[in-house]
Length: 319
Image: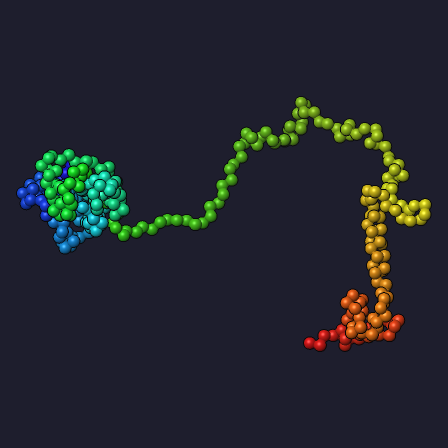
């Protein structure tokens, strides 16, 4: 109950296993803490959903803080606590836990903290083990076996933990507009360092400095460079041989090699364009008498020695 302060509106949730004297005593202690400006409300966990409390009504909710802490906080119960708390409000839970797998349908302390986070609570504290007397342990095992039909032998290692959590500082379902800008930002070009730029700058005053030595480009030329070259030495090896044939040199750059290559190609084309002769003597009779490799395949019949000519009608498609 350290989370309760003066002026708070507190909800104390009690269970059927709690005696009326225990509930009344805890309520009186809470009223002394909240003072006249605060308020303490009592509600049975089984009738909490029927009470129809307004949303964000309570500053603090205490659940399972009365002995014995025999109620398992289900998901619907945690959701209802999140609805009833004010933004930033605190919930204090006490629940019987065990190690994973020891008792069926009973959570471990880590699973309890995870369930609170999954149901919307934040700032979930570490599970603090609650020290119980022998009498309180006996009452707890008896209440669990009566409420959830647990065997008392399975409840020997059950412990009670306390977990504190807060509701986020906004209402459930609240929305807020985000100020997002999708415009492209202009790239900022860094300004050059003036000290660095001055190193690579040459002004007219620098040229007049007596310490600057300039090189005369004429001094870089030698006597051989100033001599006029012999025209014969500039001629390439391309030309006409003694037989009168044109011949290009090995590394021809004057274009004679390309010219000779074109002339050779034209000679081959002319050689290929010579009329083919018939080896079988049946080429002039028509396609029915021609072999598959006949050069006149597809042409009309003609007389021997006659040049085949196609009329404009034959060159035009039927369709």
